[in-house]
Amino acid sequence: MVKKRQDPREDAGAIREVAFSAPAGRPAGVEVLTLAELRERADACRLSTPHRPGFHHLLVLDRGHLVHCVDFREHLMEPGDLLWSRPGQVQHFGDLSGAEGRLVLFESGFLDPATAAAARIEDWYGPAVRHPEGVAARALDEALTQLHREFGALGGLPLEVHLEVLRHLLAVLVLRAAHPEGPADRPDGGTCEAGETYLRFRDAVERGFARSRRVADYARALGYAPRTLSRATEAAAGVGAKEFIDRRVVLEAKRLLAHGDQPASRIADRLGFADATNFNKFFQRQAGTTPIAFRAAVRGGD
Image 1: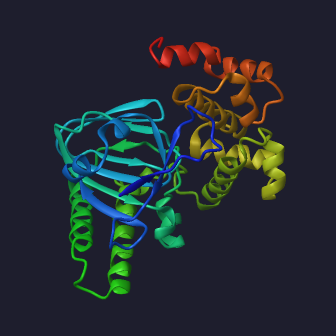
Image 2: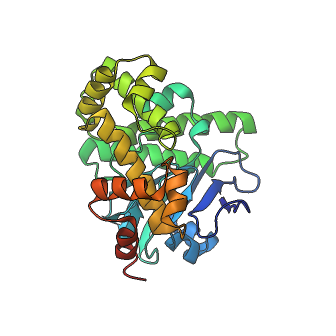
């Protein structure tokens, strides 16, 4: 299912990175399993401690209740709820003993580029948990059921054909999951040009937030005017371009403070600040508290 890797060059106490590893005899890139199977295979202690998977989690809860935390937000899932956590987000599971559901793990590259773009699979800023209802819920359940059935039918088709069937069925599922409420669910309100500009900017920020926090740098690299980026980001995310960048930097700082033991000076260096003093001022301005106070609060004083 999953494979834990620890790079010896990483700092002690850093967030644990989790890489995807296909089950024995299965095609790479995707796995479908139940929460009961997850309980049997996985180390409960590792699941319950913060980790950063390099692949997607799509979970539909069928029975019981489950607490799942994604990037400092604790979600109480009820039957019918859909969880989607993306690569790079820090998460941990609550008690799995009273929950039943179906889980799909997949790498971004398993889907074709057109599907990935239409489903906006790298939109880390969308809601982690949704509650589809009515026709949307039934369509999502049918897509998941078909994918689960096909994943368990290894041997019924030549491997390369089986792989393509899985790819297409997963495409249906993620498209349904990405738009459970229909066209109005698009954060950019359906304006293609503004949406494309935002997506390019968002992806550039994800790649470069540790190197630059200047809107002008991203505008120059992408070929837009800074005001164009700000308008597109305001329409899609509800904040201007500079605030968008700063929020991404603060999120990563919070991840490193909460889930690692690196000093503020080391975090400042990783996030591209000249020194710890500048980082402390930035963090306090954005988060309303100091890095050390935040770490103490989120860990309950431990």
